[in-house]
Length: 366
Image 1 (cartoon, one colour):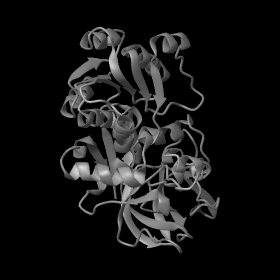
Image 2 (spheres, rainbow, N blue to C red):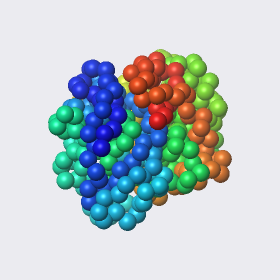
Image 3 (cartoon, helix red, strand yellow):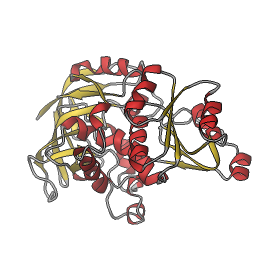
């Protein structure tokens, strides 16, 4: 079978729209007709070379679509099922899965970064040469084959765009609040970054009943937008931001500070913005090889806790449907995250717009 895809042939090059060969699903695999894919910064790290990945590759990890075919042994899914794509699937049997941390699954870790299926091979090819799928998903293509563990069945009443957002930004942001930090009602929360993940953190904090939600960003329009998602205060990024945060939190700093950008200097500022005894949650993905200076003397003497939050510490089989139900119950207004829609052949334009920092989330629709 043939599939149209946005192919990245090498780092620091533009995407090219091309036709690839797609092999049928093997044992435990499913074929998905992609309906929507989010324009996420994590894919851009592959384009810039900040995150090494084999080439040529089809990127895209935040997506949703419909099952078209299933391979031998697949019982949980059937043709016609709507699904959200899971870029950190879990086997349910390894050490981390059995100890309640499926987002750290050992079974899929190697294949996810190799861009292959579990058997070590690819299902996409370009003139006989293997094409790798980012996070073993690669949803910047009209059709893909993925592990059945990478496809979570969703309610049919949830729009494709919303299911796609649940597949990454929403689960990462809301999950960081409810799974990683377990934010207490009435507490103070600071969120650095008002992109798709940061705004999802804001919605999660509002859902948890936080009393004060302070958003920090360098773009004025994004600060205004954050208030529509539940932020109670907006602070312009800059040298006075920490002082402003302390002024809004009794002079102490916030109970919880979320960094949703992945910039080491911002992570260091997040430590200063948290009160003694507070918690700093790093939800943004930093470039591979970067380093963050979090002084041990401060952590010890002020008893601050720093926690990484990978995919919102999610159990996707549980959390995707729960988030969908919260959307349907109008407790999470996820539609507001969609800033702009693009065709697949507009993907380079979509990333250029993302880099301006003006939008929450662009969506490629098929």
